Image (cartoon, rainbow, N blue to C red; front, top):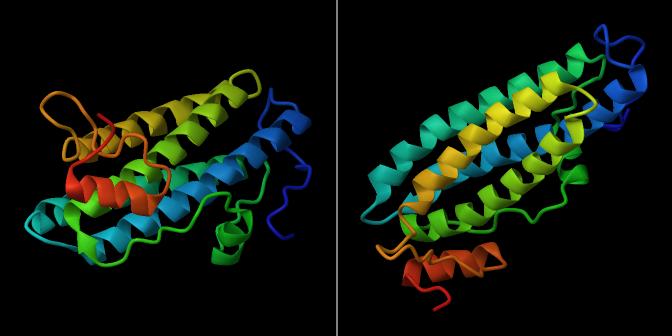
Length: 191
């Protein structure tokens, strides 16, 4: 099947089969992003070092678990709508539209800077999915809204490490993960 959604032989009552197919395609992209995010968070958990190690190391485990729960809920919604959720590594890599996380062993603040960009991308795409599903399937939209609340809170947690007392974010204006990591480590951003 190569990760392609086929027309569902059935879906939930009250949802048109074509609408269900469109929603499952949107959700499949979100499933890939959430699976990738969970793996990325665990990668950071294993590779964070420095004086803030324990704070970041312990902050990430609940995020990993929550994101894994989001993946499960998303996959089950796809199945509920009559689709086939695809969660294989090859499918994630083939469908990915974002760069792989390229920060290895690094200090906590550098990883948090890179994760800030990761979260921004996931949140922006989740918001687009939320808007796209509003008319098609409000139940799915509601699920995405709940996930967004968690994702936005997690980004807020890590941004607290990147923000100055005056509200300046050290990663502001960074376009690559490495650039965000470098700016966060130096505590610099646009003036």
